[in-house]
Image 1 (cartoon, rainbow over the protein chains, first blue to last red):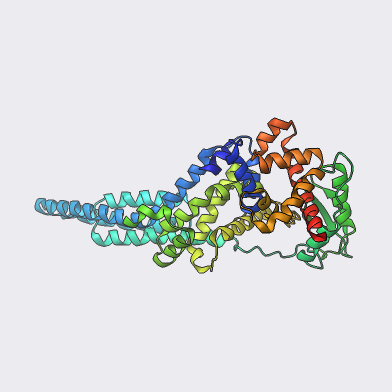
Image 2 (tube, rainbow over the protein chains, first blue to last red):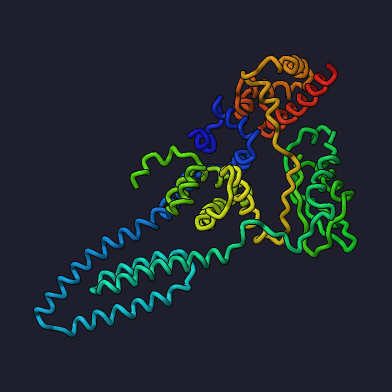
Length: 258
Length: 193
């Protein structure tokens, strides 16, 4: 896989050149390469780990039910066989105990439901297997099946509820009064590239931080990390002389690319 | 289960449709897996940390699995890129007290210049090709060297670093500025003619 070789550090030759040219046209690829450039060395196992986790999560669903029913029916046979053996030996008390033991286990499972880490579902599945391996009847197995699915769903829906929606909402945060689009345009049209030798060919991003006063003017404008002195100054100048912002307590942050 | 033998050859949109109709998560898993290297990389760009990035990629998968069928997605690749970017920016917003507003002033280059350097040219380009030759000569030495190495000799950034002794940052900068200057110059040339 070409991309994989490139991010592992094979950056020479025509193949590498092709990827680099591709990145000039493709922001997705370009961002990703930027991300990998940050690392000193790439642990490729991470990518395989993620892939493996996903495979586990997708297989788990429908094969879980299938495997479960196989195991369940096997154990059903064993259970029934043992039941008849016991009946022959005439010890009815044992059955009572086995059944009453099964019920508290299921109740414990129900109480465990609210626990949130995904590890819980793993533990639950193991405790489910425990229950199944005890001698219980077919009805109880069906209940466990449903319990397991419900437990899984409860965990997942809780995690989902805790996560924010996919489209970010910007509440109470400062915004340019003229709007993001117009502000971007202002930056593009008014940015003056530095002309001094040190900075004229510099490339990079400058993060500008500032607060907004009651009149909507930026103050306490500073650069998070210096790129190049005159470039920094230009970035600050752009914000200082630029259009108004909505008043807010929050600190504003913009990124300007040179 | 038996359909799986060719699932890796399916297009993104086919996989998505299959997931929509069957509800079998294998399809979405296969699709998402294709983009892991890119998704992980983008997260690294914004979050910097490998652990956080890994978590973010997995988290997005879990978020999307039940929801994705509700979205009307045209091209999956473009869509998933903006989704992961928003996802990572959101994580950043939660962590820092600063407001993260992503203003990237530098837009993607059009592939006009790239096209002129490639082998697939036609007669309509001859005027621009002529302009290109002249404009190349007008570039500064560093920009000229880097641009020709990159586009004509198909050398990678690392190769050019080795040959010229410039730093990686410089090479990228010379190429970027060189391209821009060429575009401006070529546009000027062809306007007057």
